[in-house]
View (cartoon, rainbow, N blue to C red):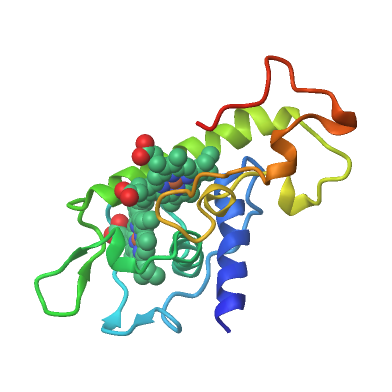
Length: 169
Ligand code: HEC
Ligand code: HEC
């Protein structure tokens, strides 16, 4: 179940973060499925980077993509509301939410400006773009990649890399 949520999130995050035009959709009938754990979801009032007319379902897929990709819960980015156990989703009080907006813009820019020029034949469609998960892989701060030892001692064929072995960053 969780895995399905995660994947759905990842794919729709990809959709929102890439440049492919989103297929024109007939506007969904509102009510059904619009009820959150604490009553009906209000219409978003504070979207600055996601499409303002995003459907509730798509917004939730994007948000579940964030929680899965960063290994966090909604309250990592969203500040508490006035009632206990409620979050004020429209509030920008938490710095993590503001950083997340920058990250959405950055991810779009990477895909639009750079990866759109690259078309590796072997890359599967879901490998052609970066998503939050490409870097974060379940962590709020991306983990530093340390190459396995054999790659540190030279290039394939025993050639030393130009400039000597890489120094750890
Ligand atoms: C990594 C940070 C992050 C996480 C985790 C996150 N969100 Fe968000 N959320 C955002 C950002 C950023 C926006 C605003 C996007 C924009 O400006 O277009 C937002 C907007 C929203 C909105 C619209 C609020 C409004 O009125 O404008 C709702 C509702 C929402 N999130 C629900 C959730 C739920 C439910 C979860 C947990 C499943 C969640 N979010 C997890 C970053 C996050
Ligand atoms: C190209 C790699 C990359 C991608 C893609 C990426 N991030 Fe990040 N993210 C980083 C790095 C690196 C940092 C730490 C930056 C720093 O501290 O200077 C970071 C930091 C963050 C933080 C702050 C963590 C903290 O502890 O305060 C949030 C929140 C975040 N990213 C959310 C996202 C979301 C949401 C997405 C997808 C829309 C995303 N990131 C996509 C590399 C990436």
